[in-house]
Image (cartoon, rainbow, N blue to C red; front, side):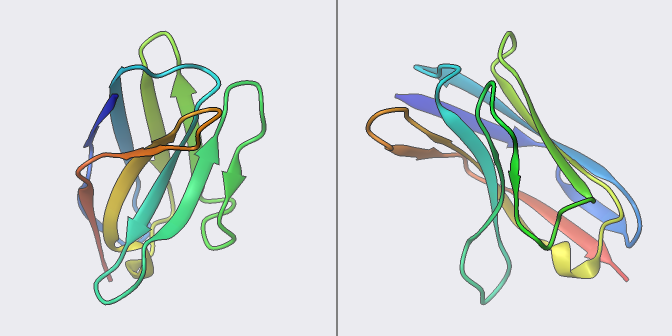
Length: 117
């Protein structure tokens, strides 16, 4: 079992920055893929970024060059630095961990990010 708790969401003006954090507990390992997804009102949940220790991060085209994902394995924490935010980035952001081998996904409860124009 893996428990994930996101924090850091909020209201920001367009062009601003936010940093999301995701504290992981339970059976989380370096080999597990961790990432961020988001879901805007009336839209499907979509990939934002994923990362696995020792590998290159993977980003959605819409956030490349603006967002940066990182993980601190010693603290079992995942981060998402979001810069140059746009109103279309407004969504609930979810932290996810996919277990190595089984691919089982564990999700956090989500944190709201609202970008005003």
